[in-house]
Image (cartoon, rainbow, N blue to C red):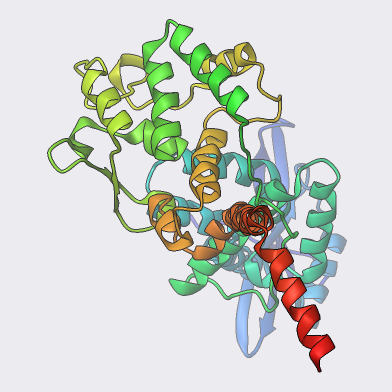
Length: 388
């Protein structure tokens, strides 16, 4: 292999060799520099005459910078590679989210959370490590979301961010936040009820509807107080007709529970048409149902119910309200029937029971007055005072 000839310049440590420029189609100089750094002799390319507009003077300037401490080309490449490698190994919120998402069961709630993440969390925090997030960032997000979303939705978004970071910290992927994420206070203890007249109108509208699946689903919600998701997931194998119990899987994230089937619900399920689907109220192609909003709203409107009344969750409230106001069911029993994890959720119906007790107390007073006993008591007391 022929030896490449090097040509000196007037600058010490700067030389060039002759090459060929493909753009200019002629020979050009390729400049190199030599210098010592930390006792090591270094030689690097400074640039080409035409392609980089390099001259001996410019090459000498680069050499001076290297001697003063600026990075060489190799050092710069190594530094960039190290930085890229470091970035690659960072557990950003986006990277933790991907791992967190893979750990969750693929349910409808996950799809909702993914939408919330992509819309509200990723644009602000996706490329950040959790340790880089400060309280002011969260405050700004909360204020921004509160201007156009309900407090409940804002709380869902902030809860999701909390779950992602806590998951990463628990699994050693990232550090926890140095502060607690404050969520908006939400008053979601909404209790819906129906008057006897509204209830009769609803049952009539249900019976007149041609969609037997939706009609029976709404009736079962009223007869059992089951949640919408529990009704959608209900399978024939979950119904024990002999012992008259329905098995509810993971009610609101809690343990599996058994609720009794009353006579009305029993007759409904016994006569409900079966399909090839394992679900009692199947959706499209026999799969799990995901919504009955359109059909249920049609029935609700026909019955003339208030616009704010929720067709399924409202029926659960109506079921609980009727039991609580009867005065014959204690709060503990009602809690078990509704599969509430905490008695605090059941306490929203306590005032209905209190009203029943007040009515009973007033009835007692009326009975006493009606018998004339209360007057006699007053008269005896007056006589006793005179005798004293």
